[in-house]
Length: 292
Ligand SMILES: Nc1ncnc2c1ncn2[C@@H]1O[C@H](COP(=O)(O)OP(=O)(O)OP(=O)(O)O)[C@@H](O)[C@H]1O
Picture (cartoon, helix red, strand yellow):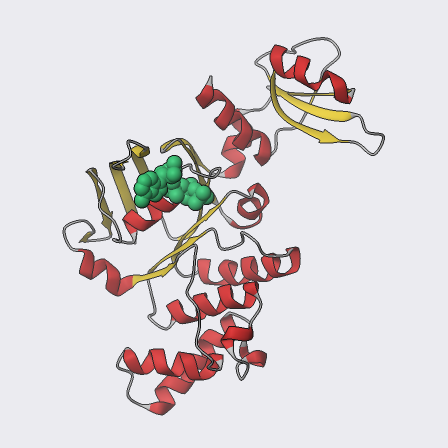
């Protein structure tokens, strides 16, 4: 099933253009929506999840006209918002059993089978008897995924799930997403470039409510071939270089010098050497070029 977003726009009452003519086609698998804070990622996700209405545009998921028939979408949707609620003092197993009963699964054996399945996918089986309120941030995020999988959703939306997770938990969470991405359409938003490199075969870069790039990470990198240049500079020179060149990133070396990466159609100066484009270059050059 394909998600199609066309000409989607939204201006909030305070005048912020959160979505500006967004067009995206999203197929089965993991789609990474990458953008800095305030880019419009949550606005787009909330709109697709039918929690808010756009000013104009269309969204369809397979045969479903999402804006005209939000209830049909909600039946096949699993949505993990950026901020999740406070959990009562129940074990993961009991809480999932409660949600499964609310869904109308009346046979206890059916519920047990389903609950075991979702706890195993999310790597929470071993800690199923612990109270969810005492879970770490990463475990709570994975519990959120277990909860939405109870619905057997066809479209899964997760909004910045790795923000605030430590590296080990982030890795565990990404592995869970990788597993469900094999069978579902998953949209996953993040401002961490490494998250999408590890996980997504297609990405969209959003800023100022506009889609700046859409394609595979390797397409993005191929477009920059021959246009990324590198050199080492002294720390105090960085502002001058930023003024004179399109500096994409500046990273410290152990000796306190800086490694800068610059976007330029041609060698900017004989002191620069060519560099192999990476996904971070794709991201930063999309952002830079949109501001130019
Ligand atoms: N309900 C609202 N009313 C007014 N402005 C809003 C509202 N929600 C978001 N905005 C503004 O719209 C813009 C896009 O916000 P949005 O939350 O969609 O971005 P984001 O990419 O998800 O960022 P973040 O990573 O910070 O959540 C921002 O300038 C934000 O301040």
